[in-house]
Every structure is written in C-alpha cells, then in structure tokens.
Image 1: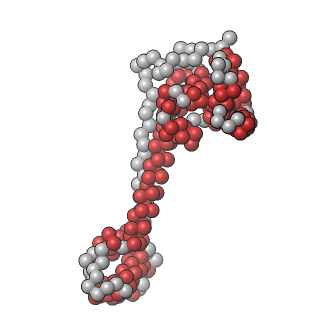
Image 2 (image 1 turned 30 degrees about the horizontal axis):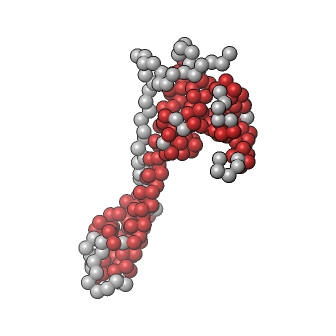
Length: 238
C-alpha cells in the first residue's frame, strides 16, 4: 500500500525548527590593503608636486623602518610606499593641474568592482547554506513526529513539486536554486525522471510512478542519466 503524501505545510504545533542565521561575510584583515587605502585617502586632491613630496617622505620612513627589526618585515610599510610611487607616476603622466581622486583611479575602481563581486558571491553562498540548513531542520522535525510524516514522503513531495512546477517551484529562480544544490541529489534525480515520465505518459497516476523514487534513492546518478537520455530522445516540440 502506498503511503499518502503529506499535506503541505504540516499542521501547526508548538515546536518550531530553529531558523539558522545568515553569517554576513566580513573582510579579513589585510595590513597591505589597509596601507594602500590610507595612502589613497591622504593623496586625495594632491597635485603631482604634492604627491612627489609625499613620496619622498614615504621613502625616508621606509629607510628608517628598515633599521628596526620589528618593522622591517611589516607588510603595511612597503604597500604604502608602493602606492605612493604608483600615484606619483599616475599624476606625473597626467595633464598639468590634474589632482588625484580615488573615484577616477582605474586601479581603485577595478578593486572595488572585484570586491563587490566577491562579497555578492560570498553572501549568496551564505544564504544558500542557511537555506539548506533550514530545509534539513524542517525535514528532521517532520521525521521525528509520529504523524505519518517520514523523510521519504517529504522528499517525494519535493520531487513531484519540482517536476510539475507547482507551488514554490513555479518560479524559475526557485527551480534554478534547487538544481544548484538546495535539494539532495536523489530528490533532483527523482524530479528529473518524473518530469520525463509525465511527458511520456501525461495521465500517469501517482501509484504508477512510485518506482521512480526507489530508483532515485539507490542510484541517483544513473537515474539522472536516464532522465537526460529520455529528454534527448524526446521528439522536437514536445
């Protein structure tokens, strides 16, 4: 006898699964980077002459620091000197009267763009990790309850919802995120095979496709290959 699918969402109880917090990525401490940023703030509005004078001071400081063992190996000092040298060259090659501005510095703008892309990627990964942890917490809670819900039922419900694009999975973004790792490989393989079988036999009943879940649970990679084969063999336009 086939276990009936659980209603969704499950009925309310006093117990609530823990909602994970998203860890916001923080920029690691980088003395060299800090030094370059400090130089850029100091150099803002400087002319070529002013930057050259600041470079002379930075070179003097570097010579002094080299005599102190505790400062000789520090990363920030050489980074500051290198940045003064770069800015001084930049202004020397610019039109007379040009003043330095980080906002128009191609090197700074490229760094900011790379930083923004890295932060966005880290934040997305953190959100995906939190979402995955949340799904696992809900599945654990349902498995513990003695209400007829078991993890296999939940996975089957998710696979059918993904295959038929129902509920949450009507949204293309939600389907893409699920395929990117929010659902386990057996659920994704089950959904892919169900989708192809339902295209072959649109009026197939739930009881007729139970075998797909069993196959996906034991050989998800093979089931995924089978789904891809059926999709490739599908006539054009279907």
